[in-house]
Image (cartoon, rainbow, N blue to C red; front, side, top):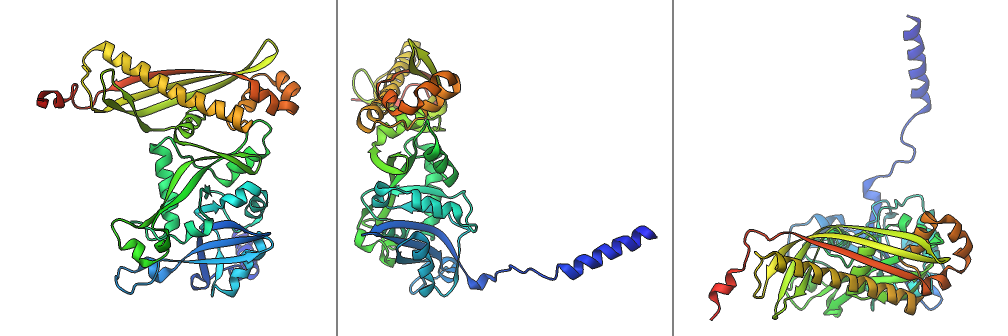
Length: 399
């Protein structure tokens, strides 16, 4: 009986104290922000936000249907000031917890993204699972104003496309806020971000006409990787170099590539599994890194005269593929050492992990050590499957 009385008293106390949701927000009072972009305008920031228009996003009507999103762009001395100025245009309070993508303009990236990241990491409304990308030959405002097909909300297109391509194509990479800040503050690795560019008829990018055309429309596309030194953009990696970088980072889940046949034509291979190990060591008192990459692939397409039933043919394809991928990796390492003089791979972290004593001796001069460091690359490529046929039927229809 006493226990029941005690529980009744406790329940009554909480009913008195907890008298409602003091911080509740009504849905019809919020503007769900799904993407944000940052550009430089003289000595000011131009902040662009993409807000979901509930009526347009849910509409199935054609003709005069509303746009699925609204893009607001405001200028301010600081990022926070520019964002707060948006209240003069938006009838609703911005809600940032549904952020999908942050787009950083190339000019902002060249000057330094530290101030932008400070704002993003400080705001208590924002989660940290959104992707961060850098524009290439475009502004963040242009990217955010581009309407897209299939997905009504462009931010969802950007998010899903990067999510998909990072799993199926070796050129792109997903970077979240925590990853980026970790790389910037690390002593042994510099950050890398995926680039996004705008193509096609740019003048209609934000018009309804853009999603009513089958061709000759404006579209954005992920292209290559941006190399940073601390928080500043210093250069770009092309497609092959981006592949090499992701192989080194063990970030390739699957991709497609081709090798040339001895007598002309190509064989296309689908990489189905990769595993990369980066090991740091000391050799004659100098740092050295060894990279071991293992790949497994299936034959996806044959456009030449080869006999896939022969072990020698398979072995030749494996050797050619290994050499090509090794070339990608060697190319990007050479570019980082000679052109950018920046360790974007985390080789410093590998030295620190495997030889802490050596790292403590060289970390102050790591940039100089990195430039001249010997990097050994080994690639083991194995073909596991040929598909549902062996030799191509194209041989039987040749004249």
